[in-house]
Length: 141
Image 1 (cartoon, helix red, strand yellow):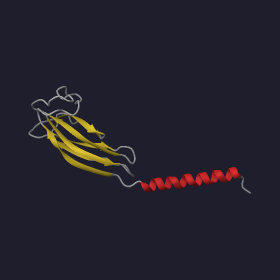
Image 2 (cartoon, rainbow, N blue to C red; image 1 turned 90 degrees about the horizontal axis):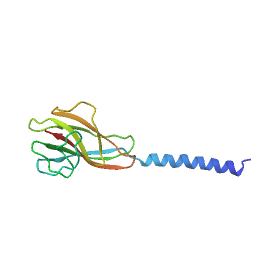
Image 3 (cartoon, rainbow, N blue to C red; image 1 turned 90 degrees about the vertical axis):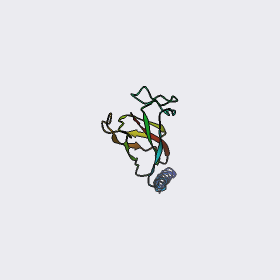
Image 4 (spheres, rainbow, N blue to C red; image 1 turned 180 degrees about the vertical axis):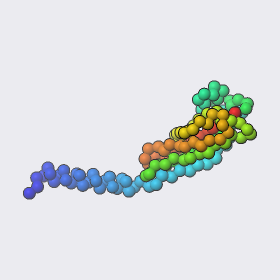
């Protein structure tokens, strides 16, 4: 004979497991889209402060000689999580100086890229079920 407390506990455990299974089943695969973004040229307004490059400051004009090459990333995280692998190449013989982002997207660089013409970067996904959008910029000079 079961006591009411044991019955309630058993029912609660089954309900919790069932709800967890439904929540996991409701999550789909991660969806990542990458689109080119217009390169920001000298005279246009910088959308961020560039770490290590004092000439690039948010809200200020981009100085002569610099180019901000961007790629727009949209990531809807599901199961399993994934980010985008982005390839950047500076135009016209320019060299990479740093990177910056706008929006909710984050970027990670796994290699030494400073003064190289090209490199790979990867983006980080947001929380499960969340959609993050932003632009990753390579600062070239």
